[in-house]
Image 1 (tube, one colour):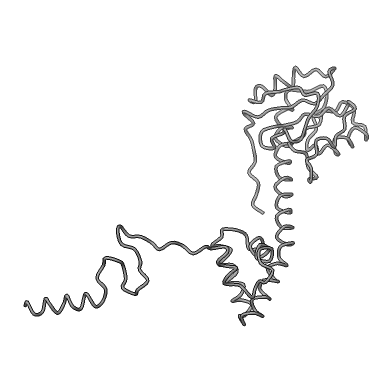
Image 2 (tube, helix red, strand yellow; image 1 turned 135 degrees about the vertical axis):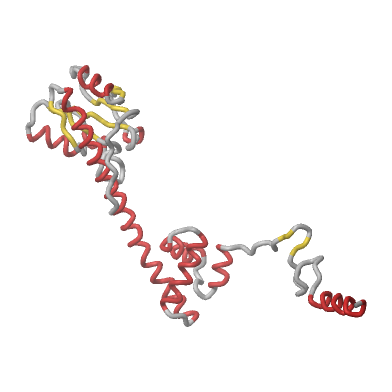
Length: 248
């Protein structure tokens, strides 16, 4: 896996404070402001409204909040980096932070000297976990689609007498022309035409409609074997050559 680029500058990010009204955010807000991060207090956080690349949630574990509200649907991670605020490091409070997907903890009362370190660790750890999750999801998708590749290769081998390498190469060429993944292309073949591969030429034509004849100025390709319309064919050139020889 390609190493994840570390974020060191948090300027123009948005800090979202999800805490009780009794939490004094003055030091936190001032420290974030020096780093170019604005701080907004929310009474309720909706995952769909969060930007994973620009938002940072500061979650107060000392208040009765449902932490799973931060988790993005279909994911084990929150919709944005979460930094936990905790005053008492009791197991129940730490469990809340773990359930909320917090990747760093900021002790209360907040100390200005620790804000940058917590930001650095929390945001970059979250980005690394998110990249790993996306890569695993992509690999799972390809693994599910691999059976369609096998089905398509076997079908072409049986129908056209190709080797498995030849069948795979042809499918790959077609998927590249479509600029789509091989798995998605093979799956679409079976969804588009249940008679595949008996109608492989027709299946390819469905993906690639015949193109119009190319035009070059006022001349276009003709079907009579005479080359370009308006341009001399082989017989014309031969006759022209004979006339020139007689004149000479």
